[in-house]
Image (spheres, rainbow, N blue to C red):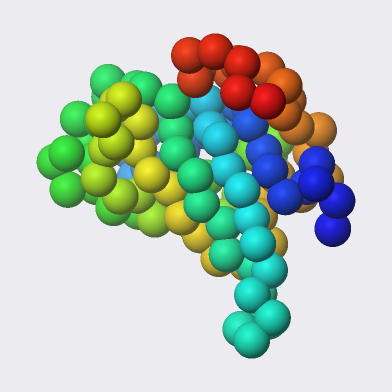
Length: 111
């Protein structure tokens, strides 16, 4: 697996039961050899609607990256207004070009 596939920083959407929210995400993956599967996690950029829903108890969604979908767990918001995401299995960004050097809503270049 190449470094480009281990990380993804760019556009995505979160599909909820009653809405779809466009978000900027920063995610990374690692393969767990004992489990035989990938674990991946990261966070969204700030989004007031998502923040309100997660603060109200929302904990699951479907993450969509370039038409690839996977279930995702949502955790408590971070101090910057983003929401932590985590999932298992093949990350939805594998095979999608990542904007590793770009900003994408995270307050500056963090290459």
